[in-house]
Image 1: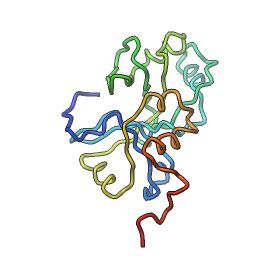
Image 2 (image 1 turned 60 degrees about the vertical axis):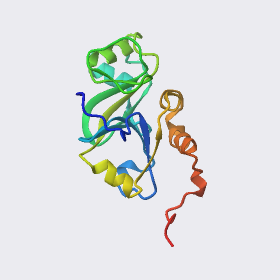
Image 3 (image 1 turned 180 degrees about the horizontal axis):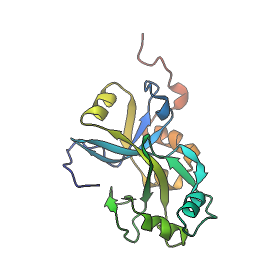
Length: 188
């Protein structure tokens, strides 16, 4: 990730939650953690859609230790699904690491996976394959059409809430009861 201009209305370190108005089925029920948001666009990782592969399998494919790790790997998004991203707590430094917030770092180099497999990785981490990306103005347009709900992210939901409960936890943080939401909200 390169340094880019951050606008005062940046949604970096925010959760995006798919609203009932979002038509794209790939993001139904998604909780996306925004790692980058600037005038040039946005990059986020879906953190509650696990893939049918566990971290141990990926580590074995990469000839690394940790094949026994039964940790979910998330489908981060439809862009570059072969590319790995590790969201993690601020621990030791790895090669390609960007600070998203005081509590969350993003690493895209293999060394963090090697350390995780060897038991020397960060205390908290999520591994994602692929990412969700938006071009210039695209996310703002989707927000204006009520496709997404947003709120500040918390490391607690990101790292300590099970993936099954993240959607509900973020909605609760926003102050929304899912039972009160319907497809027809706002339509007379």
